[in-house]
Every structure is written in C-alpha cells, then in structure tokens.
Image (cartoon, rainbow, N blue to C red; front, top):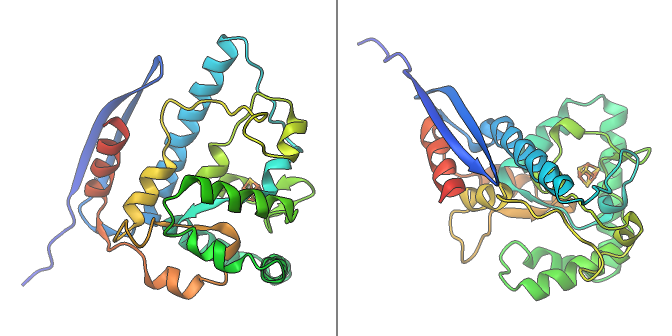
Amino acid sequence: MTAQEPQTETLETEIRIGNHSIRFSAQFSSEEVGLHELLPLFQNITDKVVDIAAAEASEQGERISCRSGCSACCSQLVPISKAEAVSLLKLIESLPGARQSEIKSRFEYNMAVLEEAGLLDELEQTASDHDKERLRSIGLKYFRLDLPCPFLRDQSCSIHPYRPLSCREFLVVSDPGYCADPDPEHVKNVALPKTVSPIIYEMCSRDQSRDRGFIPLVRLLADAESLLAGQPDPAPAVAWVQRFFKRLCG
Ligand code: SF4
C-alpha cells in the first residue's frame, strides 16, 4: 500500500476591513498542522488591519503617537495565545546561549517580583477570567510594578518580526506620556475595524469556560511544560484558515 500524497488546496477570499478590501489567495496542504505553524499568516493579516486603521485615523486628522524607541507600553500585561507561546519558546531556544540566559533570567526576575507583590495567583486566574473589570485591575497593578518585557532591549523590541499579535494591535493617538499611566480615560487607542488576537485565543481554547486560550506573556517560561502539552489538536491547514476567516468576517 502506498502512502497517500498530501493534496494542496487554494483558498481565495476578499475581506472588507474598514473602507478597504484585502484580497487573499494562498495554497495550503491537506496535511495536519499545529495552529502555531500558521502564525505568520495571522501576523501578516494583523499588520494589514493595523496599517488600514492607522491610515484611516490619519485621514480623520488623528496623529499616531507610537514611535520607534518609545517602549512605554512594553511594561504592560501582554496577553499571548497558546500558539504564540509555542513559537516564542522555540524562538528563545534558537537564540545564542548568552542571549537565552539573559532573557530567561529576566523572566525569572519578573516572576519573583510578582510573587513578592502577591500577584501571581491573580495572574494565574487571567487565563480563565471573563470579568473585564477584574482583568483591568490586574493589568493596572502589573503596570505599576514597572516590569519591562524580557524581550525589550535598548528601548526596542528585540523580537519585532515575531512580536505577539496583541503588541501589533496596540497603537495610540494620545500623548505618549499618558502611556506611562494606562488610564483608559487618557490613553486613546486607534480603533481597529477587526481584531485578530481574540480569534486566535478562541481557536487555542479547548473549553472557553476554563481556558480562554491565552496566558500573560510573563508566565511563558513558568508555564512552558503545560503550554506545550495543552496545544489545540493539529488540523488540516486549510480547515484552520477557513475557520479563522469565518470568525474574522462574521
Ligand atoms: S514582545 Fe516586544 S513589543 Fe511586545 S511587550 Fe515585549 S518588547 Fe514590547
């Protein structure tokens, strides 16, 4: 009996984003893949959505405040999907030993400060918490601890091409000074016509009542084992992508 050759399927679609359309055409294998293997596609679509939102904000006379070298938002509580967690773990393991050690010790330091502040338990609950007010309150407590992201280097993101979807989606038109105290009354985000990150979180969750499909980035190394074991089951790439577009356009 000969093994069946993997088939390829072309997926073509056009999605409406704000006042713009994005045409999408790509070939996918019928072979099963992990969701994390499709992250470059989701990152690419996120970047396109953000570009459109930024252009529309400019057309309405808004000025995007985010600039290279401004890292005020990189001390926030950053959510990452379980799929992104796997990619980031692989990325860290691919780095030279000295850089790996530096990043790992920064994660450890941040976790030690959180433990000292008694925030670890609250942080663990964010993975299943649906209460927006409580999540906001944890986010503010976290921000006030002033714990820069372990990937921040010389005030820039050292993993910029691979940064999480939530980092890509964070763009403000308010005074950058307000980002030092993320009070929603003062920080004005660019309104995105679509947000990709919640779709990926949902696709990573096996049971929304107990697991929202994301973790706080700061827990990446501490939760590595359970993250690798708790990935969504592999599925044909085309099925993943169809499910994604259905949610994006729904
Ligand atoms: S991953 Fe990069 S952009 Fe995101 S918080 Fe960390 S340093 Fe900032």
